Every structure is written in C-alpha cells, then in structure tokens.
Image 1: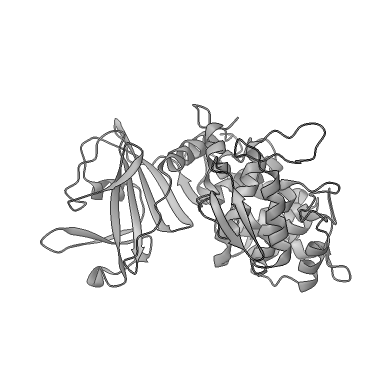
Image 2 (image 1 turned 90 degrees about the horizontal axis):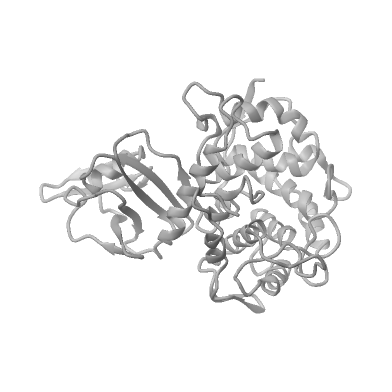
Length: 423
C-alpha cells in the first residue's frame, strides 16, 4: 500500500497526546502529564548509562537515555542523544545556543534567551557553576537542559516522571513483535502508535532491529480494515500518524467520511452518537488539518449529562469519555471558560479518589477503584486546559477546580513495576 501525502499536527495537538489502554498505553500514562517524548536508548554504546532531559517549553519535554564510557562532559552527553545541537565557543567557554531548532543561531547565541543546564542532586534539580564542556557526567547521572525564553526560567519537569517515562517506553519497545513490527493486532498497534507518536517518535523508525519490520508497516497493512470499524478508529489513526509526522494511507477512510452533516454526528462502531467516537472524530479531523464542522462541536456539547460529564458509549458519565470530550472541545477551539468545559472539569474533580487516581465510573456498583488508564485520560484533560501542577487550586471560569495534594501523577508513578510497565 502506497502512502499518500505527509501531514502534521497543528500546534494545539500537544495538548492532547496519546490515549490508550493501561497495557499498551503505559508510556502515555506517564508522559501525558508532562508531554514528555521519551525515546529508546541512543545508538552510542558503552558500559555506563545516563539520562538527558530536554525541556523546550512547559508542555514540551523529552528524555533520552544514552550509553557511554565515563567520564564525559555534559556537552558530550547532550550530543550523544542524537538531537540537533548548535553550540558556540566564545573563548571563555562553550555555550549551547540551539537544540532541535529551539533557541538562537550561534552568531546570536543569547539573543532571545538561553539554554540552562542542571543535574539531578538527590530528588531536585541543581544548577552548574561551570559550562557544559567542563561538567563531569558519570554512570547514573540525570541531566536537564531547559530553554529560558526571554530569560524567564520555566517550572522544571518532575525528574521522577522523566525517568519513569524512559523506562516505560523501553518496556513498550520490548513488547514489539520482531516478525511483523506490531503488537498483536492493528487495534493494539494503533494504541501503541498513539503512545509512541505522542513522544514524537516516528512509527517508521520503531522496530526491534534495523532490518526488522517497523510499527508503521504493520499498521498500514491493517489500516483499511481497522478504520472500517468507524469514526473512533479513524480518529485514533489520524492522531497517531499525524503526531509522528507519518503519512495517511491512500484509499483509507478519514474521520469526515463518517460524519453526518444533518445531525453533526460521527458514526460507526461501538458508542456511535456518544462521547468516545464523537470526540475521536473531532480530534482526527483536527489532526488532518481539516476544519471541524461547528455542528459536530455543538453535538458533543449537547450530549453531556446533567452532572457535567460525558459517557463514552452511553449511560453514566465516566472519566474517560469526559476527559476525551474536553480535549476534543479544546482542540476544536472551544475556550477553557466554556460552561461545557467547566462543568466537565468539576465532574472530574468529583471523581478523584483519595489515592489521587481516578476510576472509570465513579458511580459504578461494580467498583470505583482508581486505574492507570482512567487516570491518564484525566491528566491529559487537565493538561489540555492548561492546569500544569495537578495540585492545589486553579480557577476555571465560574468555579475553582481543586485537585487532591495526592496527585494523579504520583498515583501513576506508584503503579510502575521494575520492568517499566504499569500494573
């Protein structure tokens, strides 16, 4: 199957990274809160290991694990990540001017800001008193580069989450089939694609060995049948491929092919007419850089329940459907002060458990224990509306949203097993 045209996500896409099950979506459950984009071990080899975290913006942080022979400098560690790095030797020392296109040219290294470097000391970030060419990196080090646009420091990323994200993505890659590049079937592979693409890693490059099949080849082989199940599948695939900068396969239905103009509904598959397929249809349409029909947004708002939440496929409000609906509304341009979004946030507030996590249905007679997947959905919704700390109080329109000091992120981190997966 030949690909069609390459497309890319619009800027707001970083507000709604991947969504998926607890099994194949383990990387996203950790990364969504910080929009971390972890990648597998860098190609450089050696007996020692370190992590390099790069923060481009508050919602844009990546982590790379490198292998090397200690000791090396911080500048060498940064270069081992494989990222595009521009530096300048001023005579008095070397400064990093640009990483992956963020920053300044070497000729104007400090024009609009600067790259600050830190190292993990205990559980907190500590700054350096010397330049990156003179720092000493040894086995187990964790380095951070943070872009200070306008010379204004950012709130630095959670180091525990960065390390957990790296371990989670390594586990996810270890589960990939070496024979077909997939994760058992197309559905599970698309879920994995969402997690990988949320970290800006291309599915074409995601393979167990250089000559083995890629995740992209596996997905393209089954794309037509998978997308044929309805709008939710088409939307998921669109978000995943767009986030990774890959191609939309020729001849495969797009989300708008499932849109009914007269009603504003995205149809097809389980839950058609409810929040899950409707939200995925909207997200997929945005991912394809196509206009979202206003009637589709109005319909999504109209199917909210009286308690402010949405149902994924009908019935009680649930955290997954509500979180996805909020992300879709934000992606379609709905302001965070919208009454629909505020009501949805307050439903999520009411659903949080004392452990910091979230259940699927807080009113379920079969149990309301927190789970990783539901908690990840909520974290993504909170990120979409710009709530970064996931603790304390944040004002949203006519009311305030209070998140338990036992944060959702901490709950997720508590679920990570030694192999990097989440239980």
